[in-house]
Length: 313
Image (cartoon, rainbow, N blue to C red; front, side):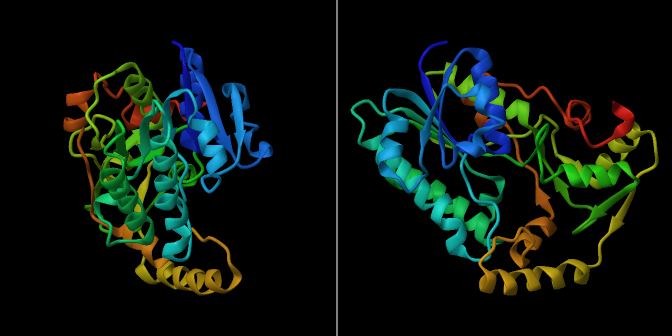
């Protein structure tokens, strides 16, 4: 492989996995990083660091210069109001598109969105991801781009879903919404593998695509508890969480965050996402444009994810 691949969000869970995979494949990785101290985990897989952020046009120009592709993973997943999300998830996409469009030979753009964008009315986060996709569709016509809507992503280094799996390993699977809800999932290695596949392909139609781990119809809570029970060799019981146990702290978080200026994860909008009954997606469109197949469904993916079930290691 040859050529520079520019990455935003390289210090995040998904960004690190992508940088590692691309570096191992022989690509030269250039990362936009706000602070050098944040790069420690990803540093072995980054060949060049560009100090700055998505509000720094000079840094974006340097990031995109002579790159053959830009992989945009940077995003905000927590906040108390729309502005907290839009500043990065919408305005950041717009600034990146502007920087790319100013290049004599613009790089291709891979933009990480979210399956939540399918339901923009649910939350500020979902609305911001949908609006970021709209920026691409309305302002990036001169670029070759794709936006990807992954479902819940897990794997080594994950900090969002790992606590949930640890709790399941102790025998309790908390259910935040309907017991019959269904959802797709994706191991982070399959995400990184898809990025590499996209880089190797020269003819991918611009557009918004979803993807999952290859299990048609996704998973239900019974599926997940059965898998965890097999892996941890103990019974796992799904436990419905009463609405008020999360709604009250979510509203308190909102009230405090707006006054103390911090970014909470648990908000009333996040609860609406968690309680949505259908987060199932399909691979039909992405597999029409890329020769990519997911390799890790949930049971195999959890076997490759350390730190959640002691009986596996």
